[in-house]
Amino acid sequence: MMSRTESRIAKTTMTEIDFKSFPTTRYQGSKRKILPWLHEHTKNLEFNTVLDAFGGSGSVSYLFKKMGKSVTYNDKLKFNSIIGKAIIENQNVTFLKEDLENLKEWIKSNDYNDFIEKTFKGIYYLPKENKWLDGINNGIINMNHYRGKTLEYKKSMTYYALFQACLIKRPYNLFHRNNLSMRTADVERNFGNKVTWEKSFKMYFEKFILEANKLVFDSQTPCFSLNKSVFDLDNVDYDLVYLDPPYLNKKETNETTNYLKCYHFLEGLANYNKWEKLIDFNSANLRFKNIDKGNHFRRENVTETFEELIKKFQNSTIVLSYKSGGNPSIDTLVRIMKKYKKNVYTRSIPYVYALKRPGTDIKKSREVLIFGI
Ligand SMILES: C[S@@+](CC[C@H](N)C(=O)[O-])C[C@H]1O[C@@H](n2cnc3c(N)ncnc32)[C@H](O)[C@@H]1O
Image (tube, rainbow, N blue to C red; front, side):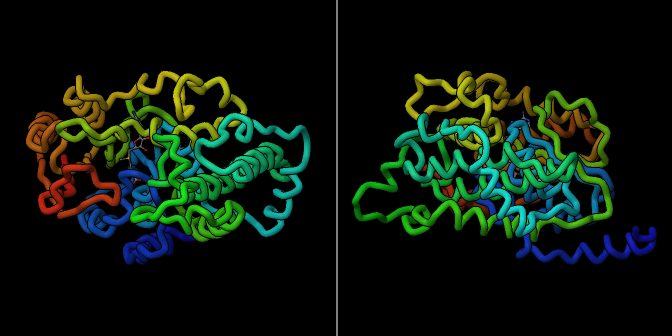
């Protein structure tokens, strides 16, 4: 155990952050690339406990963890919260070489479930890849060499590597369409990366397990990962709340606002044993049933939703990530923030996401932070 002084020194040193060592992520809306800017604007705020309410890939939580804060990661999707377990809450469990060997045994053991192979033929991956996915899920379910939190973190690291491998092998890194043919069609391509898609799951899995191992560190401060809708969180007692909600553009042409639509396959992997019951078998890409149910970020009431959020966390310092061209407008959000907070200001930089929307004006596109202190 570190003494208090040592711990303070460690935290100070952690403010010189090596961003190159952060998780590589292909998650839509990830703030990975602008973390240094986010760090610049949060490092002088006074806070110790922080809620990353819409955690996604975990990259912002990881920044706060590196800053020595007591971080609570949260995301409504279970697969994301597992990533939060692996790299935020977990402070010291890594995946050993022998775990990899054991995993191969666990894959073979017990009644073999071939759910993905049977169900997702021709939709996202090749038949032998679907078989591999069933295998690894059987392996995770049969993991039994550990107990308690150690088991939970080992499993979450396995999932971390599995999810990253699934993403990297998908066109656009998404599951919103059944477009396996983009990979298999014999055509000249001026998009995507055929070479990346065709590399094996096994290779990617082992690569991302190593990445996960490198990400685990003990920040000497408790961190947590939750799996709730932000509107259902009971505890609002955080010094700082970081909000990075799904983004609606003014025309609402972005079909990817609903994260469950984009990543239902990973959510299925995280719920492997009950996946079959969750699927809408009438949909072409076998997404989940009731996909829009419980999605608060819809055009009809999005301004009220933002007000509900800001009101909920009015006793904390609020940092809201946003971008230009959104619904509601930045002016509306500033007006709402001023109703609940005394000191309100914004900061912005030019920024365009990798998956830019048709019609995005690259020159005018800006990433914005709205502060309510
Ligand atoms: C813009 S992304 C966050 C990106 C994240 N900051 C990062 O750097 O990766 C928004 C996230 O909010 C989650 N989400 C959507 N509605 C939610 C809700 N009601 N409560 C909690 N999380 C929600 C989505 O699953 C998605 O991961």
